Image (cartoon, one colour):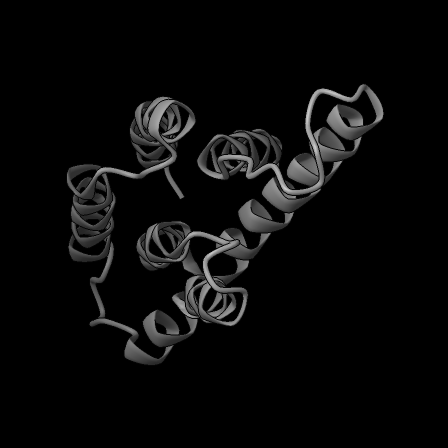
Length: 146
């Protein structure tokens, strides 16, 4: 994946991170921007046709997050899953999985540290988009070296 696309996702996710931290909501216009960037990436990189099966698989991490949102009664935000589906369309299954794994590790470590320092309680909800942004940054650094 070209660095330009990763940078574009990074800029959008940074703006969405600020919104998520301040309001605990992800603006629809930001999610639409992620889908638009993914659509542009698909359109410009599908010379031999669109891999529909690959696209269906690429949204699976986000679909799983949306299912978990329903099962946990909103403890995982539905917007996080919808955003992850949009990222998946552009990044693909493998890279999206790496981004989300990085985000989950970062969120877990942050949560444990904040609990140990008594800054939060077990019922505190942390915004997830900043961790997704972190996961994207780490993945971009790893891809850039490869």
